[in-house]
Amino acid sequence: MHTAHRIAIVAIVVASGMTPHASWAQQTVNATLLSDSIQLETHNVKAGRVTLDIRNDASNTMTHELVVLKTDLADNALPVGKGQVLEHKLKKIGEVEDIAPGKSKRASFTLAPGHYALICNKPGHYAMGMHTALVVTP
Ligand SMILES: [Cu+2]
Image (cartoon, helix red, strand yellow):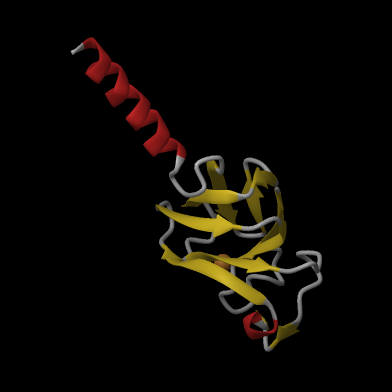
């Protein structure tokens, strides 16, 4: 009985060690959408599952969004046409659409190492300053 108990524990340890990406970090980053900027709690995270907790605190009572783009370009130097960033010219990881004033939304993304730009791409909002950078390290 004592031996069986020990074997069971060893089996659990081995099983959890085999979970894919077990060594990848689980991280949550608070993001605040303002009328003229996007504030991040941190601009550096480790590769893996990253949860963005996004709050629309903009004073202009408009609905905003957060688009995650993987690009080596600086977040203030993205290609723009007709008031919007040309997302199709960049690698789009995902987005959280339509966050109402005063509301929050959460979403998780699996991020590989690299440089990212986080933007609001409602027409004109990028030009107003709604963009920031996020660096993902291995
Ligand atoms: Cu916006």
